[in-house]
Length: 154
Image (cartoon, helix red, strand yellow):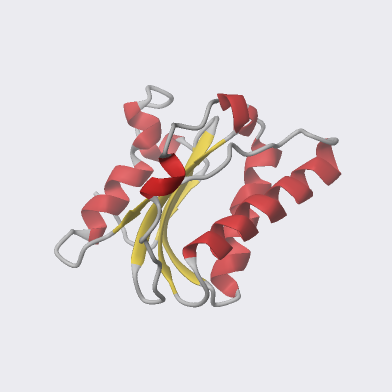
């Protein structure tokens, strides 16, 4: 996928702060649906869990779709670019080591949304975990195996 002209300049002036909440989306290079392999998808989930357990982030909601992921979290330490570099680098290393070189290659960059105080986190989490339903992969989110949320959602 070609990088959008001036996309880098759009990021100038943006900063990440511990304590802020972010919704990020990261896509597999060429949108290959490699996360239909549950073992590969679970390795990505494990890396998100390790970042949470190490105190770098506080995960609120996530979903691993066939060719991308959505992750809602509070940044607790470091920077957003460092978190995403760790997630993408560690997950690619783990997947490629277990399944063969170049099995997982992430698209450069990621989309992030800094959540404003007035935004409803539970509603945002609901949006994240209902992605498989909206994509037509399942009829109810409980049927999809690759999501998590800290709240009980109705």
